[in-house]
Length: 312
Image (cartoon, rainbow, N blue to C red):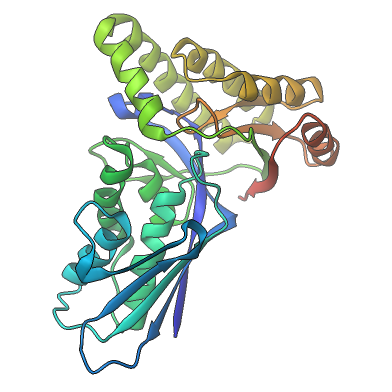
């Protein structure tokens, strides 16, 4: 038996603009994990692979699943990358504590946990860059035109600055930075939000590109503020980023409610994280005030709240 994990993630800055060539900042969230366990099966027929995902009540044999099944694609691409034609008969079980459709990278984390578990069980290894590339191909099934942020930050498991066509760059953290991730309880598919922004961009490219440019500038300033430990500057940048996301029409009443509650209870900044239209908002808080803000968000109806710290 072999078990491997992959963390969730959140985007700090750069949602949507990253699809149009701007940078994004993202961090892994180890408080939630996808986990895959590979177990040998007694079978006289080699290469029989059973895939189970109890969270979604799924079960299927790999050879019977079509090319559009994300779990099957993650398995097939991994076996191809390892150049394994005749694998042993194995049972692959996937579980996850990462909320689905909430901007925390659940699909990419599941793919990477599958990749890692198969590699470990078969006595091989794939570099993080290769894990990321495989997961990105699977992400296309989930999201159509994924940004590449999720698979990158999860595969490398460190805070990264990401931009299309460039290698991911780790960014420096000047002081421990405390964030609250509050689940609005509203679910939305990434592809829906990305599609909405793309439609708006096609109708009015100059206005949308101006917004993307502003988000890109904010993201670069945020990277500098994180490095310098300038938390109040960082909070202001988060608030400005949220204004621009509103202009892209990807916020929601549930997200706005939680953002307002966080700011009214001494959060330094707050914004949605991920594609929007639902999912999570993030709030930058002082360590001392974190508990009181958690309580306020809980009373405001947050479905779940995670405290995470970006370490130096």
